[in-house]
Length: 269
Ligand SMILES: Nc1ncnc2c1ncn2[C@@H]1O[C@H](COP(=O)(O)OP(=O)(O)O)[C@@H](O)[C@H]1O
Ligand SMILES: [Mg+2]
Picture 1: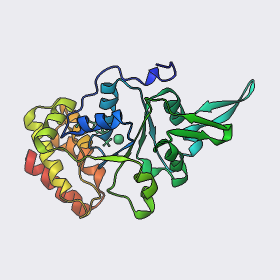
Picture 2: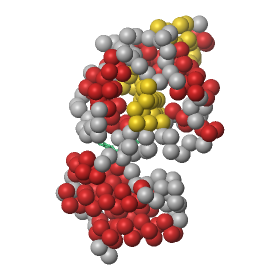
Picture 3: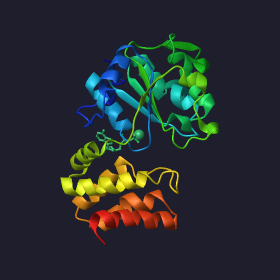
């Protein structure tokens, strides 16, 4: 393996609790080098899943957090001035393509469409990346794999993936886990006991039913883990739930009142 990508290898196994066949299906997609989209709400385990898969496959993982300021040069690379003149520097995508890493474009719809088109020739049979500024066509290393995450929840149509992009990818659906599995995850990730984890998960599940009625998305697994972490640290449950679960997701008095009601129903007044 090339020295440039060795630092991106995961040394220890990231804990991931599967909900269904996603590990087997992703392995098959990887074997075919089928580009993949991980779909699902924020904080439901997509990033943890790709970290786990990279570890399982023993492949380096290069993650790019996408945002609207991300340019195609940020992905592919640019000429920079140094003592010897201008020198080309590969961007994270080019590094993954050249040397054979998994490239994970996190929250890809946040990037502008003109940025994401650079992935098109990589996501079909060509498996190439044209570096126009440099006049180079990079052929993807056999181990290169392209994966992106995408939250279909709060996309307006202006902020959706192009059909021509979507059609190049396979997709795996992610959801908040079933109650028993989520309890297991929260115990493991935060260190609280089963009883406490069950109460926290109960609150989160009730909040998710408010989706579309005052909140965009309910309390995520990530937030439940954070609340559990505060409780494990010695903070009382009510304050932990306020800080980590209820206050971050809404500013609306009525919604907050309803959420506080869920907390009291599970932890007492
Ligand atoms: N299936 C799972 N197995 C292990 N941990 C999980 C799982 N789902 C969620 N988590 C926990 O929730 C947190 C947030 O998940 P993450 O993968 O960052 O969400 P996403 O990328 O979907 O926004 C993780 O750090 C982990 O603690
Ligand atoms: Mg993520």
